[in-house]
Length: 285
Length: 231
Image 1 (tube, each protein chain N blue to C red):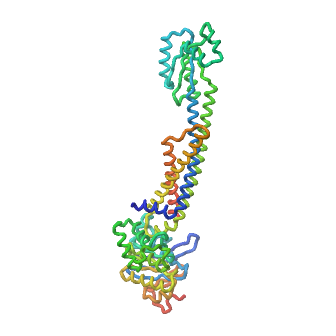
Image 2 (cartoon, one colour):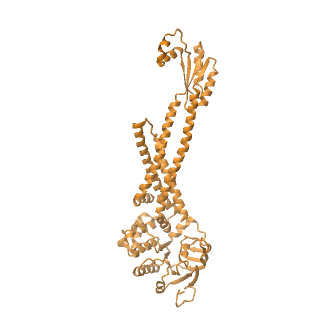
Image 3 (cartoon, rainbow over the protein chains, first blue to last red):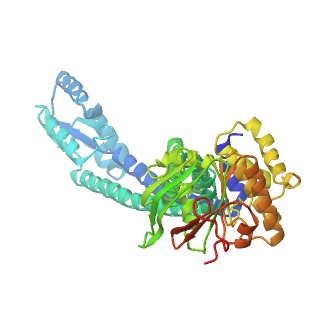
């Protein structure tokens, strides 16, 4: 077996308790971060599904010729922000109203003339579903000669915007704080493992071990601890998610990439924590 | 081999650990470094294995200039030395064999040769039968023998010993000193720091005596004195 791998694994065998403690500490630090990540992921999902309902409706002047509408529809679909634009005729509008507004069904049935205008419903691409883009597109729609009025629920879109900004700000600040705490705790844990082996490091140096030789098993060991802690954290997060999903609310779990990122983050902190601890230790003695 | 020229070493908090020390230990020589504790014996040894750098003056060891040695070169210097301490400094959770093998592994020695070389030095120090014993299971004298075996396994040109018998009873002390003499007889230079004057008187070797950081007597240079090192 490779010497570096052997030395790294020997450390687990020699100090099983401390190693288990390190892994557990790393696992729980990352678990807290993971829980926060779950909240963020689900909040994002919720906001995204709300944003999907953002829609602009351009009401057409009565008697607009169908050719003009068709040409306009093509123009609108060509807007870079637009995902889809669909024409809703006067009859269709009435049919929908009858289906949706059950309490007015009788009134609507007895109408002599259809009072509802035809319209074009515009859906925007993801990323453009905020107040600025919606307003800009609405303005452009108003420029069409056959458009009578444009509606998009300005208040609602603005509120959604603010909610999104808030979620992002809280996500960054709290996420960074949790990540910092995780880094500090994991760094301290790894440092304890290095200090515990200070005597051994001193002996290694006396018999002519290079710093690189001393460092490598520690780096590998730190990375392994981080990796194990990360895996445990993802496992714990999944258990938490499963419980929430079953008993509280329907929720989403991390994508495979996000889960891999948590494990990778653990391994990385383990590696960097070891590198700085051993580096500092080697410099001092 | 080992050459000190007008070496000064300042303590980090002021004061001098070594004052203008000069001596030369030749290839294959056996030299005692004597003096009270705090006289500077350990500092001399630390300068030899580049744990410390001289504040002024020049220290040359086995082709390296310790005054200017680069950190990268320190391990290479130490591989040419064997170092033995009063407190043995063995890795407690490894066997005698593993402790010795470790000194070879760190140098990148070929794996296939390690076992044979380890057994050879363990036989040389008389511990072949205890190769599988953990160091905590060995007596003080045996632990020091393992440490000496570890120091020898890289075939050093110089063996440094810092109070190697300080923790040992008389019998173990005699055994270790005899072992060091045998090692010296096979061509390895030995520099041994000790404050055990009986030990020094019994052996016909060179004596370098330090007092408060200054070299006060060197039997290779000064007139022999009847009451050697009796301050």
